[in-house]
Length: 425
Image (cartoon, rainbow, N blue to C red; front, side, top):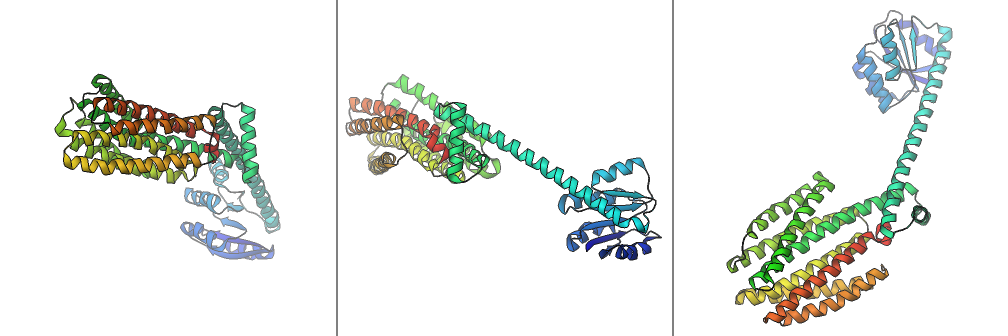
């Protein structure tokens, strides 16, 4: 039996409606007099249809029915005396399926119910078709974006990129749209992780370049490199501010900006020996802030390959950190030298662990393998320079080797970010 909830708004003939509905085989679950309670009662009773007897159904009723259509859709019949053309339009817009003016006749009740139900089914089917079309359009949009990422990452054709997506879809038993969304998501976070990781490296490179100027090693060149590094931090912060969610990462990025503002101010002007310790402390704070941001981005990406990219980015930082400690140990006092020996040992251990990890993982291409081989050679040269850092020749070798090693890991991070295996996880 079809069930109905009835809304009566003080109509004189309303007393006849209830028994006539029962006679027509419609089970009345309840009667609602107040329009303000209509939505609540529909949700509570969950009737097959809603029947309203209201001589002048104003905007309050139309809004209530519209809310029902959005939250708990069902066929709606309204019996009324109102023949205003604007209200008829408003009734249709709000989700009323049968707007019956000036009476209904008991013999027509079942037909009116069937009419309302048929219109409801038709509208529901059309809405589902529209949602399906919209869903397929959105999936197509995601596929096109994912193909563009793969085409750029692997330098493949449009057809080859689609074949990669289809293969990944079959292997993971997921729709193309889901796989495409995963690739887009991973690529977006890969770029953010890479940029945040650069901030870690630059926090150490800046201090290293400052110390090289103090040591009198290629002062003009390193002064220019210092300026370039400062501009890179500004650029990365600007891009991260645009790409990251402010509610999610705004506080972490804000702390990086705050610390960087203080360090940037201290790096202005000619290097001074009495500022070494203070600037190194700010550099360490910037490193910690950037590390916190990078780690949270990696976790938010929720894909294992982001860990690979984060590790490669950390190698950049450790190469600069090792060189910084080697120089600071030479230029600083006894207390500073002791701290720097510990820092060098820690950086060396972490760097070699990271290099071993990257060499052991299966993710590899000829470019990645070549870069890892170059990194091993560069690391040996930098250690030799650090061992001889008290001599001008050793400092020059340390400076050259640390920049060369940085360049290797910059390229390696780019390879991991663009790698097909990286993107599809």
